[in-house]
Image (cartoon, rainbow, N blue to C red; front, side, top):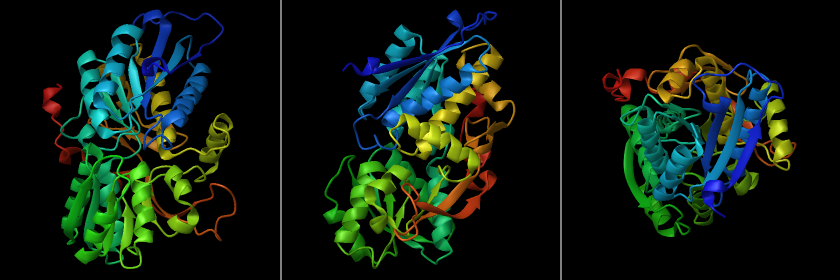
Length: 402
């Protein structure tokens, strides 16, 4: 299948409304650039497409005559493929925003292209904090979480248990490098130490050698600067090699789909930071049931929730700003706090960071779980202003935008 033409979804109202002069054809085309077949496909993939479609459906009720098309494609975790799709979408298909973008390397490349084209990047599944730091752009909004939040919050949670000596297993591309960097900085600031690190390419299956090195290091924490299939394999093999009795496993970016893949018998007791859980409150439960109806009963990950919320906020901003010019749309998104049904009160900062509360969760044991997907228990709520890096600390070159 041609990845550029993987899917198109359209929603429109049935009545004629006044034209939006700055929106060609009164139509907004949003591309979901995702991983359909690789190590992140359960976290994002078809679920991210379904989430964007739900956003389009909900926007149709308030669109004032605008129509929305959702396109989707598989970037195959290859930056050249991702850039090619993005360029074709913009130049040939009239796409005005790209959302999801798992794989931080691809997200950074696409965000740079979107800045050049004056279109909008909605990095709802991209983790590197560089997107709101040295690589920030006036056309980028980063939703859900980032490597600073994941690293800093995990360090603080484990420091309370006096677990301050870490050994890193790092997936060797932009995501893993940023997770290691941001967690190491937080660890140093808290008085902890890094006793070693091993870097492995994306898609590594055998972690025996890195795990043996971690065991011999004497570290109290095995920090996994990875996600998806790489992280799942590392956690399973840590148990098989007898690492877990002597080291606390700290997954720096784990999601519901990963816990499901591990199973509660293996994942029980893991503590981690996420910005969304389907069973958090009445609003998250109601939306998640709608998502599950489109996904054969599967509950959403935080990435799926982020794709929905970022897409809906973007569509409303286009409508209100009466333009698809990326800089103006992002300014409209920044203009006032967003009352989001999945993430609560959300503020978009000038560096493009969406700020909202995040949560420390712990995986339930099989005995504690009462139903499918009843996997988490809430340990603590971390206010957004404490969770996210401060506006002046990321190195975003604001002056270059003015």
